[in-house]
Amino acid sequence: MMAYEMLTGGLPFKNAKSPIEIINFHMKEPPPPPSKLRPDLNIPEAVDEVIQKMVAKSRDDRHANAEELRAHLAEAMGPRRKTAAFSLKSLPALPYPMIAAIGGCAVVLGLLIYLLRR
Image (tube, rainbow, N blue to C red; front, side):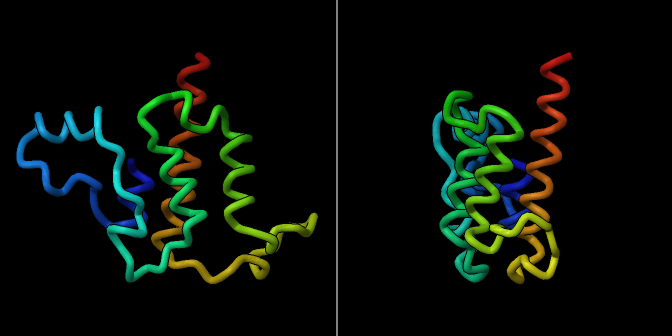
């Protein structure tokens, strides 16, 4: 959810009026794709898919591990990432919130994996 908020600038369930409604939304309703909340950012569908998979309700619907998330992110980046050497110049000019969201997701996921394996 932190990555979602970093990308969109807000939480997905803004219509919730009480803490109970927020909990119900988080437990039962999938959040709308980030591109629906922020069409002005022109968020690619591939990034929507990565974020949606990261915030999926069921553990089975989320990335199994950091390597799977990394592969999904690389796929979302498209053919620009075909070279063996990584270069910042090879990356597209993405809006800062999108970059921050992806990085934040990776950090949060890494922390969760670390804590769950302890």
